[in-house]
Length: 290
Image (tube, rainbow, N blue to C red; front, top):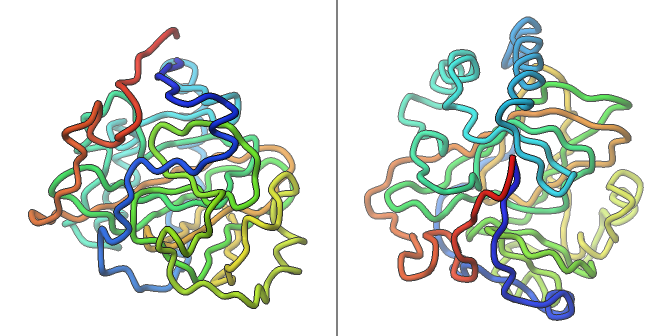
């Protein structure tokens, strides 16, 4: 299944601009916890069940995003996934957790996904900020499979308390993301990234471990908080405002990522006067073929 949306800028324009769907960088004030791993969050039998389910279900309902990410959207709507994962989430975080899968009415998912990645994501945050009454809380990613050598997940000390954003300082890419902010021309400081470290003390380490297709300039001003191993059955947890990215991997990996939310009646951020509730730049997405 693939989708098409309008592209309001030319490739040349996109190479020379930042893309800001939502400029609000103070959408939440909490989120000051360290990132961590939950050991043995799922059992080996559950991991195999989830892996087999991904392989079979993707053939039926999966989405191919630029031949880069192959995903099943709204995973908590799938009974097998929900039965395994939901009780564990409630046990660890409390039963007031809200899943994006349960509350989204979007045409295309911009939150939870069960994915197969064949190329590492770049540096980003994942805050799903556009649903009135629900504020971002935690990201949890559950490694299901990795083909090839070990991979890791890097969290940084820097935080961005705004809309989901791709941080691409120095990258010349003309993509137009439907949901994410993109920062690549102006400094991260200009857009409200907190706690930048001009010493770049971790530059040498980042050059060794991060994806080779991404220039080191992307991490300018950042310092490493944690380097967490992508390990089957464990779960990786970070505040949704934490800048993070995977290290290099050579083949592919499969993971389940969930953006956990909390109900908050005072939280109102829907972009209701625009084409969609989550972007002031894009018209509604249309499914073009399966």
